[in-house]
Length: 323
Ligand SMILES: Cc1ncc(C[n+]2csc(CCOP(=O)(O)OP(=O)(O)O)c2C)c(N)n1
Ligand SMILES: [Mg+2]
Image (tube, rainbow, N blue to C red; front, top):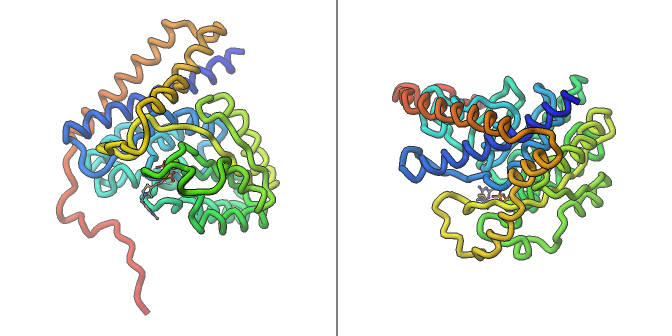
């Protein structure tokens, strides 16, 4: 019982951490403290947290351009993440990658990715490696509705199913690919239907319900780990902010955003925890305060860190030797 309580409290803490990290990043971005681009994950927290709750530390994930939530849910260090957003030397990529390139191989985070759908073949490749090495690891591949139209998606699902690879494809269907509504970029509503073509299970989940996400993806992860092959999991969700910070959002109505905010995954789960007497409100306040402090520390750490040395510009590059 105590274990279950801690587990559920952990899910809330992880979602709260993502929400607050993102809110802080958005604020700093508009203060012009962060260079580059920023794609906020606010509203989609239950997907990353519910999915990563069924993974081991050494399982792999591949992420997207909207990747902060995936990284935090998998256990990334907030200081190094914030320092990367600031473009500082102490960041995950020594300040040379920014928001869309955060990776931490030590805990299986194989990288955010600025290429839409770019993580899908990578995840399929690591799953093939795990099968070959018999290392027992599962790879989870996060991607969006837009990415499910990329050729690499179809090629990957085809081979992963044929070879029964230990991979779970998690589609975050937030109803838009950049500024294009789903109805204008694909002729189906349920992306999980695409699983049929590849003879693998396709599951649809309320992506704003962290427990539903956890329970369903846990089955898919177990299935993958047991050598029974991949699953395509579609989480229906919604991003509260624009596609990128600065997006004028002319392609959707304020009413639509307001409607989805009624299904806020954090509010919904907090209510569940309180109403079922799983956690008292003062314990929640305590957890929230701890996270607030952690985020403040991350910002201070990033601000106090040095920028990359100019002479490091040509370090850490991969160059293929010409023949
Ligand atoms: C290969 C490629 N094509 C186009 C883009 C430009 N682009 C960036 S995000 C995006 C939309 C992605 O939509 P989706 O996969 O649904 O993810 P979401 O942004 O909704 O999380 C596009 C087209 C890109 N980064 N990479
Ligand atoms: Mg999308």
